[in-house]
Amino acid sequence: MTRLSDEHTEDLIRESLEHLATRAPDGAEIRDALTQRSRSRPRMALALVAAAVAVAIIALGVPLSLRAYTAVTPASPRDADWSVLPYKPGWLPDGFKEMTRSAKPYPAPQTRTWSGGDAGQIQLTTTPLDERRGPWTIAPAPNQIIVHGRVGMVSEVYGDATMLTWSPDGAYVLNLTLHDVRDPRGVGQRIADEMVRDGRARVSGELRFGRLPADLELSGVNLAMMVDGGTTELEATRSGQPGAAAVVTARIGGARPDAGDAAPVPLKIRGLDGLALPTRNGRLGQLDETVAVQVEGGRWLTVSGERDRATLADIAEGLQLIPGDYSWFGKPPE
Image 1 (spheres, one colour):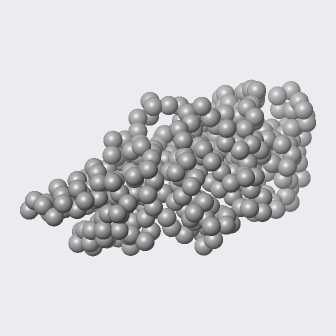
Image 2 (cartoon, rainbow, N blue to C red; image 1 turned 30 degrees about the horizontal axis):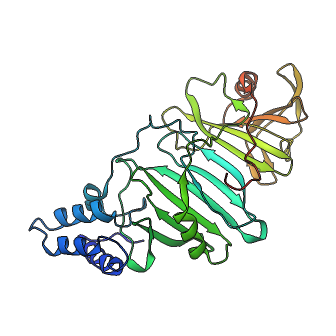
Image 3 (cartoon, rainbow, N blue to C red; image 1 turned 180 degrees about the vertical axis):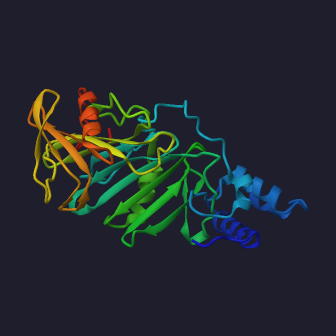
């Protein structure tokens, strides 16, 4: 989407209000407010519009001049542990079951996905609104949706998917992406209309970092259901850079690490016979230095990344294995 001038933005707001007048309960009041706006032009008009209907805000590239008028009170990092998922669908089409959950520290997004097999896939991403994020954009009228009186946006993404974006509460932005779903706009609208607060579901698996190098810190937790069972993956990035690419990844799951074109080297890990693999070419491309060991139950504990073998082995030694909650795998929203 291109960046908008102030004049073009005001035109889009007027077009949006006309488009919504017959459906939004306070449309007439908002149009009157625009008609009677003061000479300070966009400041008062945009403030009234944002306060009354939250005109289609979405966290993509947009004019900085709008930030002062569409920003909302940011979600507090103390609202909840970042591993707690604040929203879930109250309805999904029959046959859709939850397959993945992932989270990163505030204010990064949290994601969960449901698969319907041949019926497609649905992904929900929840991002805290933060005054440091933005700027914002206004959705043209044909791309607008209304969710409980709040204006959002619908767009095509990735060439074959449809994404609905809206803010249900002024604290979060929700992105609902439907891949290969029949009538994605209609189905997405119903899911959005029946979205409910959660606050109980967590991204909590079987691993915790113990010892980490001083320059690294936990930056993400990913849970997924694979053909060989549930997996937990932890990511660590350089301290203060939670949004950067992972420097080290720890994983527990059923799959043995890909040896690629390298020969495994025996290595004692956690008192067990494990292995080490150098940087190598694997089935999916170049792979980082890796250490791994098969633990109780036949599953593989793996640590890999941009660190030397001794550091990776030390991280593996310090990993804490805890009971994991996979009870939500393969189920519809509860």
